[in-house]
Image (cartoon, rainbow over the protein chains, first blue to last red):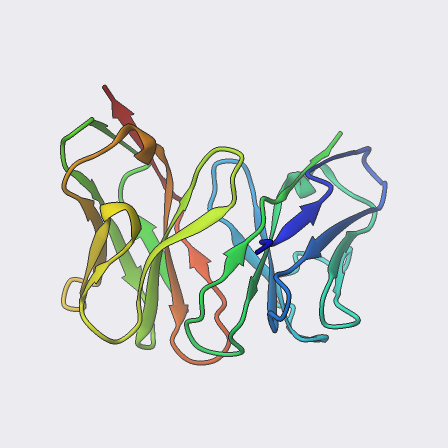
Length: 115
Length: 114
């Protein structure tokens, strides 16, 4: 079946522009995660949804970052007034499990470059 | 707070020789531990996971890892490297309860030469 998809795969934004990154999780997966992977680093947790509820947003680096999952399926990560330090790969993952060590399936990521 | 330390940023091996990627973890709770692999331009793929069962965990593609609580280690091994194993490997920790927020190490790049 289809895996996690993300779009766009690449995004170039000028500093100050707003961007929206989309994640389509595996159908039926309850949990959805966003991670940020800077160049040469491991991914870092941004936020977590269980269905449409955002249960943890402790990893969002500033109030310029906003995520939503209004119908409990597709999710959008929005970054307002982008800055150069926002340049990274943004990864989305989904999981069938609500809690515990259910496997997270990752999408290919969106590479954001802010110029 | 949880964290993982991957002791080598790069590991180079010859095809057919053993692979050892080292990882130490820190966790206030009984952790779940994972190894993920990331090939260029591909998504992260789960190699194996440890939750609370057997301390020696077998994963895909011939990889395995051993959970050693006394050493707070979770090293990844493979008896014989293949060219296709060349990739970035991440050691990951999460709490065993609650939702599964993953904490990644900085990664180890495995280079395999013919």
